[in-house]
Image (cartoon, rainbow, N blue to C red; front, side, top):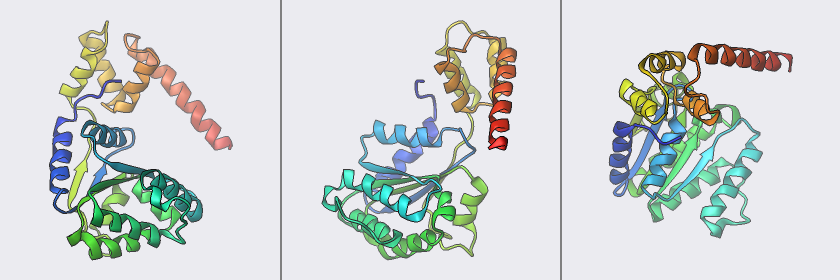
Length: 242
């Protein structure tokens, strides 16, 4: 699906990126699931040809997660190929030392999942941020779908990362203007169907992406909803059995 809207958010990210040419920036991007946080960031990085390394934090064992990150890092920085970090302390130290040498962007998607991988990461991150923030250039973006958890991590004074953010974006569902832009790209739609589709998925981009992928635009929205509901019921039923 063609990238739709998000002009305000893209402008804000561009401003932050310009600031990050002269200093270190830590930006949190949060919002409900499927609202397009990852798509926004990846589009921004590609659109502006920004050097970056993207890490997805899944709920794995610490050693497995760390090895995966180091492998990704070695693709961008061949000098560490074959190197093994004993823990996340060494990994984050390398990231901050890199930002001391060159302007770069590091992205951590589903950042809150470090709670389940290794919660000490937040203290490690705080340590190196406080040590290096005044002598680095670059941008660290942390993305999270669990909004309450993300806000707690950065805004609760009991947490290590309290007051470390330099920027924050809360991504919302598509606005009416963005929905109209999306519908204008689809043949055979009318105002009545457009309204039903907007109400059906509440402006969440992921579901409209699936509709386009399955060539469902122009179909009866009520029938679509019933099919979707049956599929989701089967999905959750399967998860319950497992």
